[in-house]
Picture 1 (cartoon, rainbow, N blue to C red):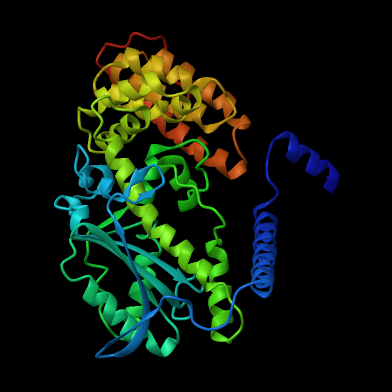
Picture 2: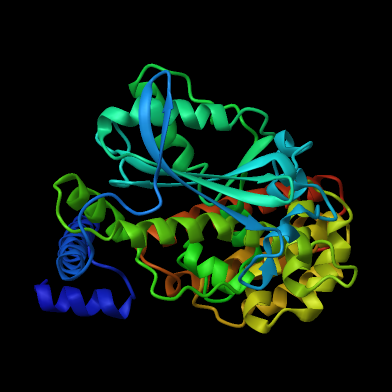
Length: 439
């Protein structure tokens, strides 16, 4: 078989290239992207900036030495985006432990929590990644105080980490955006490097990233803070220096060259303030008596995970307000809750929304759920068999080869369960259908 014919056949089947080639292409794209990113960052730094320390730094000292920090405070009515910072102090209708699906947050309060964000020299784990800017924000009396600890020289890191530990005293928990996967671990590595225990690991941790993802706002596929803050909290940044350029700015500062660390500090400040605005907006949505579609969807999903019966009312409320595309993406979740409530008719009706396009995974997910409903609730084994055959026929229109293999395994598992259920029903003399299923 010639290479051209093989490529044509692969395109007709909507398959990607073989996995090794795909991996090599992806690695090449990532490498080129990193090179271009470094080039753009260096070009920006060459065009502007200034040498020397950033402005507004205060020199602090403790038992481990001295370091620099910038401290700013904001009144509670200071607006960042659509809401004032003080709006974050109003608790949600349900606790943060329910919204975040974390029992450690049962007594969590934003009044005495610390809002954490960091800037690093890279995204990889290990001792080679330096945390050069640590932002800790807390409510103090009628103000919000933002402390930005800055690493002027790697030798100052023990003093900087000691100051962080002291500022965490009395905190009930921490708030971050994607911090459970990144910030907390990078800080832990730096404490471990100096043979110290990290105070961040034991704190209850509210990661707003996962709450924002459950809201599923349109256009938030990349999951970035800048995207989420705009869609959820109405934050619009002007002349913002991308976080990807922060490492180059710090390295230029270390070499004594002109740098854009002022832009890094401003970007970092906005990141921390956006944590407050996002928390405030999430709490506000979940406090409203007439719950909006996004909040109803968030609460429905949170209660759904706990198999709480209250999830049904929020699912129904969200379902009537969501647009068709969002309905398609969450139809199986809603139908699963209806199935657990022993309402097969409503569940099957909801699943019809997910079957509008037979070429995506929503169709297959809906088919699997319909097989489950017919097998366990309606006991209509013929209908379940028809659903299996329909899904099997549509399987080759969905995804690339390895994805189809995964779906085939799921379908085979359902077919085997259907065969056993039919066999059991026949042995009891209660089978209403006409013959054995063919997996």
